Image 1: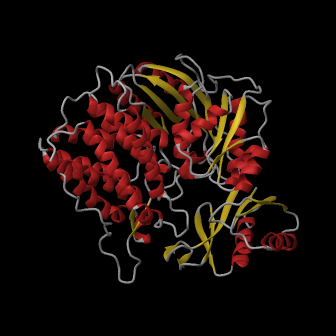
Image 2: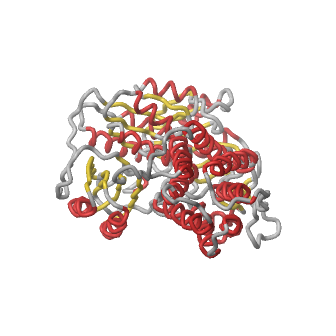
Image 3: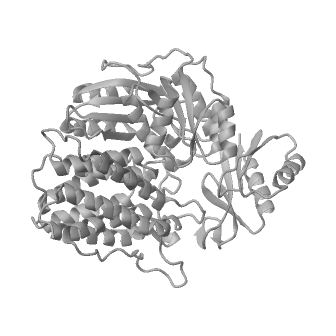
Length: 581
């Protein structure tokens, strides 16, 4: 049993946590809030922790510096590796939890129970701070419960504190369906929270030397007879994730302001309060540095641009400022804030700017590039043909940063094509900014939206205007998908059973059928019922022979004035992806 958490214990914890995630990877992957075959939370957490372990082992012999303890150095290496290897929303949040632990313990001479309790509180706060609109009943709730239990222990005994934290996390996980109706309807608990429970169990086991007792999944209470068994589902994460039970509301603000800020934490706390009163979609994330002034990435939607930037001047030194004016109406989607452009800050000073001014007027030139995430050989060829650099599906932060740097362009647009990848792309923005590369993320949710965005790209436009045009074009493209149900579940379209054919519109199950071709036709008809001039069909790896011809014939007969484009996308899990513009 350990009295303090030293560097060797951190190394054992990382190894034990990774081993636990690998053991339960399939359990978490196979279970999803939606009955579609793309659950990958377990895989994302394994890949994130693998990167953390690799960074930890590779850097232990490096000099931590005079102000960082050996255990603090180990935690910083682990957090940095997780940041660069983060995949998916849960991976991103776990990387912030590790950063919070490292920030709190880096200079603490000896880590006992009280020190760890304080660090768990800092970690939970870092996780909440990384999410624009935190939702309870998620990984965030589990982290907060663990921190609260550790604090209530009020003990210097490391074993008591880690045990209390792990037990409270498990209890909080079991209660997540009480907090999120979407979880209760699906009979599941949160997948990201399940992963965090495994990591806390591993920490308790590292400290005590005994196996943790909460390694098995926890069922939500009071299930009705005949309901499916409780499963895990990833619902925590930044706004825009498909399974988020509280999708972003429309933003009523006209401008997006983003900048890097060199400031002290206390000043940043005051800045958050000021910006929260000025607008919405507020995100403030720090880099966790201790070898110099901390740098924060500040993002907010406002009407008063000058006040938002002046608040940064009061807090510290804002730089690389970007102001983007949103279109009055994004075609087909209004002004949904989760489809607004997430832009990396451009070079600029800290002077006051009035609404309507751009602080980073960029001239057009050949130094632009696009990076697109694509799962499928056909899609990769399509995007490469549009002049984009293609990254394979489900990339890590380091994968995206490498692709961005590899373009050798000063200004890069990233198209993630998946809500889960968007969280990783946002981390890549900050990493690329440190290398002097300006990156904007157009949060495309489907490859058909990326095709629409690339179709309007114009190097003769200012970079900011070009990115806005791409975002508008992507937002005007509605998308649908066809897949096979992986399990029984209650959806908004009714109860589905394994093997049923599901038709999804904008990520939500709208149709349940038994025949693939018939469901494909019904999905296209439903989407075109709302209007449309161009239909794009992407055939997946599992598309049967003759599907393309049958759908062309249906469109020609039922919708003769609609233009149709058909491509072999080769995407897994989805035999058909539909775009309507």
